[in-house]
Length: 54
Image (cartoon, rainbow, N blue to C red; front, side):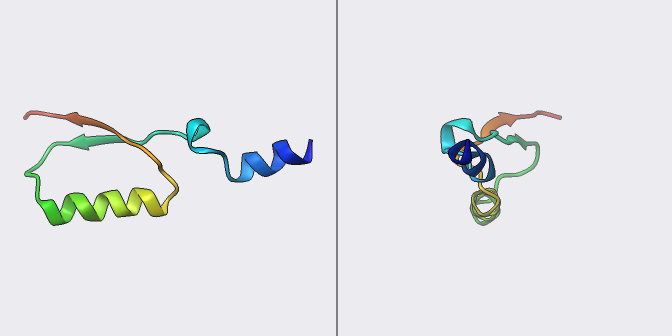
């Protein structure tokens, strides 16, 4: 049971949530890198990208 509680505090990548990353503005390399770094610092191992027109 202790192992389960420890995993809940820092789950393996396959059990973490995946942020929905909406691209609805001009894509600038520096800003994309900043956002990726921010997600990584928050513990995200992956993201789901969805370009949005309009």
